[in-house]
Length: 131
Image 1: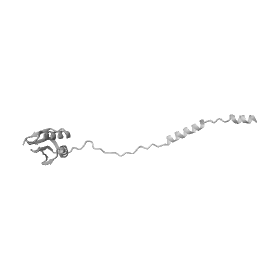
Image 2: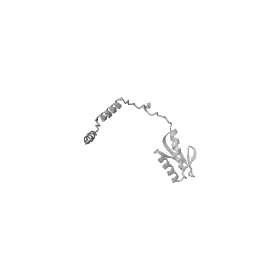
Image 3: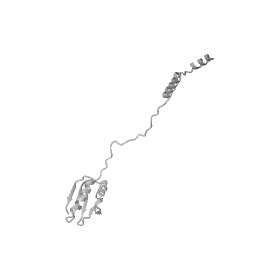
Image 4: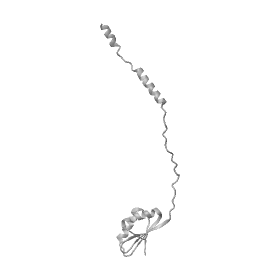
């Protein structure tokens, strides 16, 4: 009876080589049969150069009266709105220079604030104009 038990125990090894061969064959089959799809993208037709918009060339004119009120295009503006008004003017026209017409009785501080606000927006050439 002992001889039968020893024969069964010796036959317990499992060979994995055929199973690995089948796995590799299936892997190769799926790689070969897979079709790779090229991603579809939208084609854009871009212009070669940016369009040139010809704006008329003008000078921006700021005025300071004797009571230190600042005017732009004959409208009273606040001192903090100098760069905003200059930006709106630059959207319509190409600015060649900025003219500042200051009254002789106006404060120097107001003139310097207007110049600083203009320089803060863009580095335009500034000219002082007498009345």
